[in-house]
Structure formats: structure tokens, C-alpha cells
Image (cartoon, rainbow, N blue to C red; front, side, top):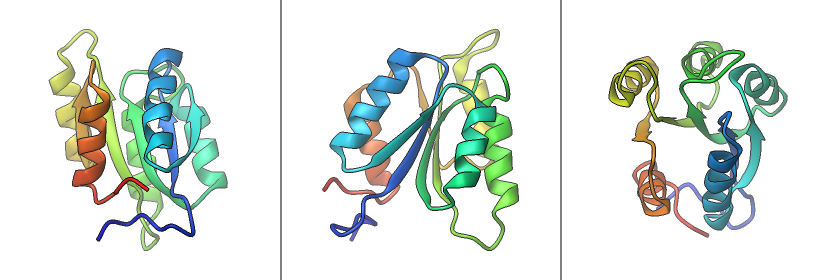
Length: 136
């Protein structure tokens, strides 16, 4: 009953300025059958997103240089009225304030699920399941 289709892979965009997090999330998503694009900041992610209007999932960090995850979430949620909206998972390890405060803001602005860093592959897989994605 999930959104996964055996004839077409879902596209995902992973946005994080930490290459280790990028690679970890990419590996989990590819293991779940996604075709994955990566970006290291919100500005680059916005450009990639505009080129591919058929992303099913965005996984974005909140605190990044050159446009943060909040700006990206707002761009996606405000700029695709009437179009199919991707699911958004916001991730954060915090910064000057606790990660939960950033994630609460992300939820309020349109993130479907939030995960505090560090999170496990199981945590991410469970989040995907809550969003209706099933492994292929």
C-alpha cells in the first residue's frame, strides 16, 4: 500500500553540509530503492530541486551555509502550489540552541517528519515507513 513502484524508482534529495551524514543517508535511501541526489547546502539543493520536479522525498539538515534547511522547506512548500509535494524529513544536531527547537520550527513550516542527529538507519527506515514509503 506504499508509494513505491517496481517500475519507477523514487527520487530523493539529501541536503547536508556534512559528507558523512550525506553518505549515510544516501546509503540508507538507496537500500530502500531510492535514486538519490545530494547537495551540501540549501542554495545548491534549491537549484537541483528546480531541475527535477519529481522528487518524492527531501531529507534536509536545518543548519547549513548558503541557505539553510528552513529556507529550503519554505521554498518547496510555498513554490509548488497545486503540484505534487515531496515528503520532507528535517534533520538537525542543533547548534546554539537545542536541535528540538530547530526541528519544531521545521515541523511548523512544512516538514513531515523530523529526526534529531545522531539517528540510526532504523530510525530513518521507520520515518520512511511512516511517510508511506516501503522498501523495494
